[in-house]
Image (cartoon, rainbow, N blue to C red; front, top):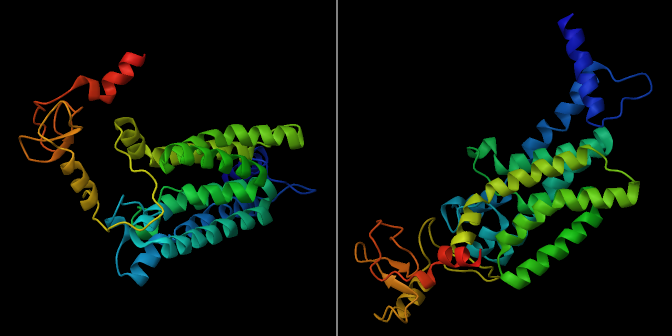
Length: 304
């Protein structure tokens, strides 16, 4: 009796999610198979993180130990160069495309959208790599391309405009995923006369997870310390270290004159810190040369 009602519940859930039920209704086993097939298999496909696999196979290193610590295309580009980055992007494309096509074969648009979310989730939290994966931007973009090419084209245009204008890939990524549900709903209304349900729901969940994975980037953007895009290979540095050229650049503009300097040496630990910081981020020593006019927080308050 309990299994009977559980089966009916699964059927009702599947129909509300947008799955097609067939002429005489969907059997409990088939319903369960569709749901699991659009979740488990795509999640496992997402676990094949190309950045981690290529780094270990070709360089015998874990990409998560270098640069930003992210197992994604941008960090691979900065750490290993264009060739490895292109291979990483290709791997992400293949796994995301395969997952979406599988979901589409099992349950049309609803299955494709559900599979797209779970392949992204598997990419972010891979069980095979201790739940430390990438931030899901490339994977999400490929899922959007497979589900709605028009939506993808609009978002890519917005992405390009933001990157060209600001040089911040993280800002462009966050803005585009936040706009994804809005753009998708608008496109669906124009093409079909109404929203489809499951794709819109999954778009909201995907946007939420991508923004969550970029929380540190958002913090750095607010502080003005986020790295700008560079399409060349940089010197490989461990996570948390500052590139030698950046440190040298900062030291060169420390003249010993607080009226001219943008950066000063901390009197507590000797690290180079922005003159607009009240305390050192490394040792919490008060900055004796602090200038309010160089403090981004003070500037934002004045604007308000």
